[in-house]
Length: 466
Image 1 (cartoon, rainbow, N blue to C red):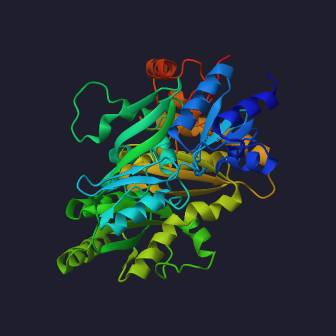
Image 2 (image 1 turned 135 degrees about the vertical axis):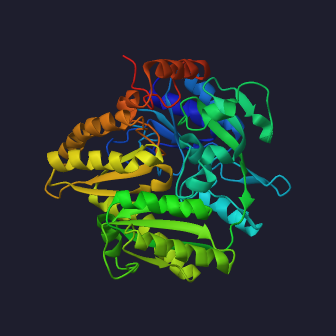
Image 3 (image 1 turned 135 degrees about the horizontal axis):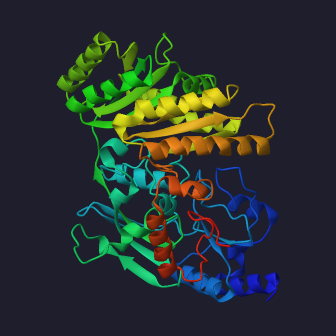
């Protein structure tokens, strides 16, 4: 069958207006925030119903057409990139909130619901959806589930998987499964829901999700503390975490913050520059807790761990302090960064970071290296900025060499090559640094059960066969 005939047959299943083949659409929907692969999809289809998704998957099985899911396209691992003639299945049109259950504190969403839309809906009902990150204004719930998104509140609330009460999925065979049925307690064998969370669309597509909500936090207050080195940040974490119920504990280097300050829309936290900063957040529900936070700050200064600090006194100041951290990723995107999203157990962070820093500095002294991340849960973001004079292809090839050294250190510390961004195509060749050969074989066997013809996001997580 010709390509035109394939597309005409697909259009008959979902309506011609729901199939896009124009060049701008192929370019837009065929990529995510990574820039390492050139998008080259067959077409883009925008289903509106579960039945549409099932029909698309069955059509793809019949014609052996590969499918790539597309949400908000804010991913950083190329899991949503269609670079080899795949059909992009965009969930932009499946974007409705179907039900709000205040008794169970749950919301039933289609996969195209924007993360911030769910956060705002929760707030309207005096509740809280705690999974939060810089791209929440454009990322979609289906994509969050596909990558098990984390973000800035993991230290208290955990990853996306903690908030998924139930799923409806269309498997790689085209079957519709209802997983867990929104139950809090369900001891009836394998929890297939958890397999689809973090699977990056390689087993099937999420077509409906029931998300849990929590009580809204009260009087959130942030502190930014300056430190001489990363090693000093760890006892600060221990001191505050032992006395306060933290909602976040982030860190960033001065070099990272300097990029944000250069934009001119957020002030420096205090006059004295420090090599590293910690940003922590807690609920100051009464004056005693605020006083305790100040006492802990003074203790950290006395111990020499903290050089300077500030605590928010208003919602505006809270937002400004958070901008210092949350604006980093967007700001440095203009510098063509090479990103690594790695993690170890929290106690290993200082030694782990020091080893990686030393290797990159020794081999590539001309590269600007920026560190930031969710240090309270052991997740570090290593960003290498491309020198202005260096060609993109040469830069990415050079960074691939850096990857090997970095991931050897990750393996040494029993860490993860991808803490929250997923594997996609950018990390698939390094999966063995975090997973044993036996684990990888079991993972491939699971994929074969749900996707026997290998049409679901092929080439993601695992390298292509043959």
